[in-house]
Length: 261
Image: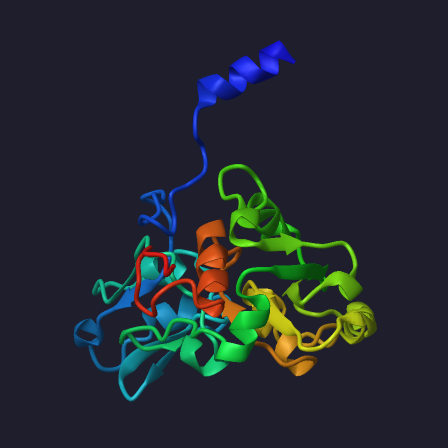
């Protein structure tokens, strides 16, 4: 026990300051993309051709990236000979509507807070049941990371619970495979109303690399209504945390990390 206490004292305070201060993120993090349509010459399809999930399209001569399908791989960035697209380390990606994830380079519409009545119910105590609906365990791992001392999700009153009957909503990962559809629906039915649904990761939003496959349902929205979309493959823990706090009204719409008291 003494060794444990000494080791903990040596480590010091390890919980990230976010959202009281902007998060410290790795330089190589591929977060919100930057698109510059002025650098796209007419007819260029280099980035579109290499996208593994058809997340990129050229619309009216300008690139449009579906962040809900994007795997945040570097293939499009590498393929573009004109430097019209690159990923930034900005981890703020969560939105309240699927359509907001169709990104064309303009300011991304970040997640909006729930209505006042819902914030009163969930704002200080939110219990979530996590359901892996066919996920590869990457998104699930980053959700688990949120419960560690570094991120300490419980300091915001947000906790993962073991039973849907004790939950205020579901956090769903995976493309919703055929074998998991009924289990997901039963879990949703067991959550007492009012309740929330949060789709985490490209698979849960659009089916990810499995989109269009007959053995899955292209994400959660085909089965249940979704209140929060958190893109990524997998999303960084800060991306998930940022989305949850915005949903609960704990952050200003464009805040990089200033908490609302």
